[in-house]
Image (tube, rainbow, N blue to C red; front, side, top):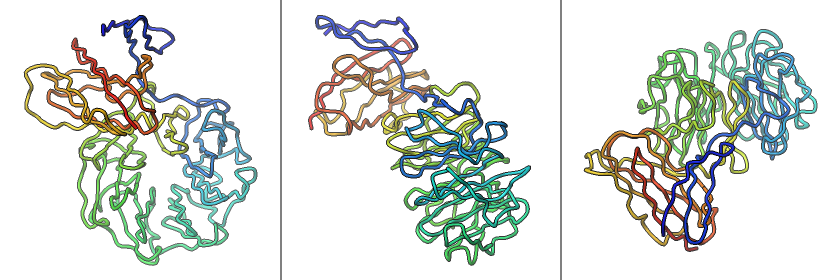
Length: 416
């Protein structure tokens, strides 16, 4: 089959066509898409999901401050009655939505029981509500400034009790089973095994912990000033290891399956191997926009940024690229996927004799681009990428590697 490359750009999107047995490829790349209809380009500092609703907290953009709500996967947004102040944190459990307000006014924790239609301030009414965590019947609030520390409510925010961690500004919280982790300003990570009655400072004890996330038995900690990147503990905080994403601020971390997402001033990074390797997945996010929060709903990941909300299908990201050899190959090559036929995952191997920007894209039999697996600068070496075709039907598919002046396309068969 003859392959013709067409480089004509049309409306920032490209497509495939099959005409008389000729496959015409027009390149494109999957990317983040801005979804700000109804809220404008507000600075988003927090995101939360309740049922099929997404809530976004805005920061320092009067008169468009407060909490916004979307009922259609972020396509449109409506400002709730909490329409003032800087909303630095959000959490949801059942029908209850909690909002942490920062300085300079109206600081504390607010609550809505009717999906954001009305809000009431809880007894935590002084001190910045930096972070909120809903864990079953327990709501934890990390507070800074006045009333700083970790507070706990066991009755959906009606009453709150300050825990024994009452001398630290707490910027992040995460939970694994009965273990609650608190990230503090310049004092590292604390651990409680008894719902906050007592706390123990972990060995990560001299960092400004801006973000925390749990994934199975792994706990990830993102730092801010000093900018030491992401740390990982696999033993409940007894020991920590700095990951390869280092020397950078990490303002938010999220997990989904085996994926870990980290937001930095340089954009969004994804790891498929618990932080050993990180891949920049920033396509579509304009310039030096910082991402401050993540949430996941209906097979989409949402990123709250300094320029509104971005959205991207998780399916575009459910793939991992791994270097399998540091030996410099003698030439460019694209191997046949294995296994082939496959159901539903397959591996694609390729080799690069020199450092180059590399694209690896999946297409269907009609020439329509389905997914960009790789779109980044890679070092010379041999790599392997896993593609998951869970959401696709049986049939013929193509994968195309472009690296520098090299281009190659192979056929594969999905058989369910």
